[in-house]
Amino acid sequence: MADGESGDPALPTCNACGALDGDDVPKAQSLHAGSKPPAPRFPATGLPLIVIHGADDGLIPDAFPARPGA
Image (cartoon, rainbow, N blue to C red; front, side):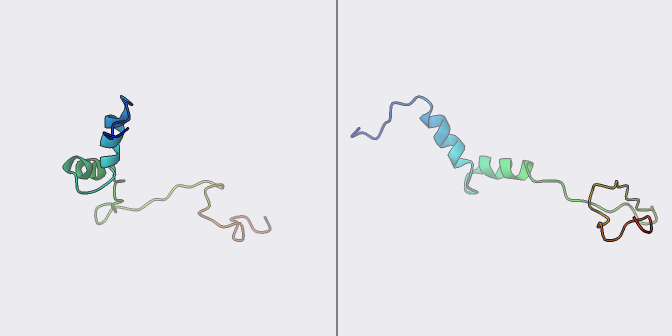
């Protein structure tokens, strides 16, 4: 195809989605800003920090069990 058109009706949409990958398009910047994970925050000063975990979450390695001899 000499004119560069593929005849695929989905090509413009694919090209638009591909443009969202870069940071030079304002819509891409907005998309990236909205999809960043939230940053963890510590509780206010004076409040306790409580960590609740289970046996299978990996917070306590198997080499250091809570039960002696386990």
